[in-house]
Length: 422
View (cartoon, rainbow, N blue to C red):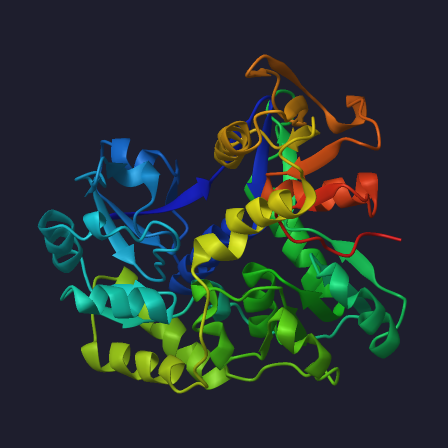
């Protein structure tokens, strides 16, 4: 049996690939497990090859979305028969439809179990359907504690609402970084995994502390021994495990933040999880150790979490904004920023509820196509007057829109806005 890992995962947008460095960190963490095992001969696959691979039998550890579209055929799991999956830190996130818990998928997961679950919601859901599972957190927390602290304060996609408080309590000398990068598909031969490795190495070597809203900044930094302040407007089901390691703050808790940042300490638990992950990759399974790890993550203060989809894109809030701002008898002009499924839904909603409203433009920096007769343009080429409303329907574009327009009077941002570089 040979060993495999995912080389990288991309979301293609026009001529660019939108790359979340946190996604790639999960693959790097699997590489770290292989390093601890002394395994150097690793076959690297793209995510889509989990279903299409044919060849020598491969062991593939997964720390990912359980029902990922790349290895689904309709409603059914479709991982290659030549791949032995090892489910270490799986989450169901937004793909939690009951139809995926059919008898075929349940049988497959039990035949290839136990399933290590990243978060408590996934663990509870799988257990509800009789699937052999345990709560294991994310593999990224097995990374080794660093030997030497850094000197920089990093704001890694930190909420804009905290800017003043950060400067008051932690100082004005900080560096802003982001988890989202866009790579040219043509002419850029650098692998996203290498970019992610450099990104995290830079944090490891230089961070004195980190303020972030990103799970895959918080988890590796906690493992590395870097003090972390985790804050975001809404906390969703993805975080129902890391709250065992660090304090989490939702928007209504921002006023009560403890600014005396300290590094998390869980080395014994880390050792237990790492050794168990290696045992699983090697084909072993110790139900007692699985249970110990589940108990470790279960011994935490419980709180209510939002669903993943509501946390990221609350379309109802956008509809409320439109009804609050617009008059059905007026000829409203509006621009959509972000050509996606949400834009499609909002366009039809406006056409039905506000028939006099006119779409004046569509902004998307990574697509060149028409949307109901309107050509997409990059935001710097958009021509719009002050009377025109800007509805930012792409969560990831909210930060760019805020940076470009500032506090524009007639603008709605569907996603969060982060502190940007000075």
